[in-house]
Picture (cartoon, rainbow, N blue to C red):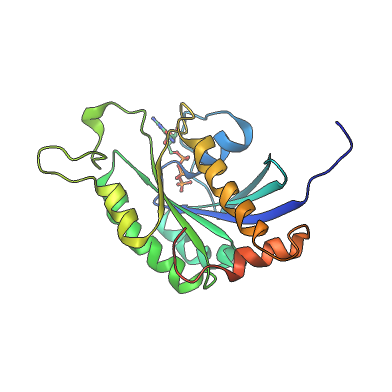
Length: 208
Ligand SMILES: Nc1nc2c(ncn2[C@@H]2O[C@H](COP(=O)(O)OP(=O)(O)OP(=O)(O)O)[C@@H](O)[C@H]2O)c(=O)[nH]1
């Protein structure tokens, strides 16, 4: 510890997506660097947090991991209040979960803050190739669905594995860098409230 604390950017992140796609596992991998093999469905939502230091800023990710089960869906708008970032997660071995991304995006547009930033995450990339139902590369005339959907909506996109950790640090580092860069453009970048308000004001569309 050198006693110097960096200016802090706090961001509320909400994780949405179908049941079982690995939302809790992603949050746990990022905040605790661990993986839970057995599936325990989230009830309502759970909260966790992690701080990442960048060159001249600290970003605090306050993460709300929502429940994907249909019966909890009506609760999601409550968690979207004041959110800065939403991760929409699908499972690369479940085409159904990918098809449902559109309805998650619609829900974010309807109930999220007007300037919510969204990222699309294809999880479980560690699974065997023959289990993959959502192609990532152009193969046999089948296009890169995840990437194309993200491009179509102007979303940040990454494939991850909560099991091995692949891609997860990259997602949070990329998002944190965008927030830090955003703050630098502000006139008084050192104050938390301005950094926070940048997150809320700057976004015009549902994109990263
Ligand atoms: N192979 C593999 N399995 C994963 C991965 N992420 C999650 N899982 C498994 O998928 C199952 C569901 O994971 P959860 O993280 O509970 O899924 P969730 O999206 O939070 O589910 P809900 O709480 O019902 O919304 C668990 O058995 C996890 O171990 C991954 O990256 N790879």
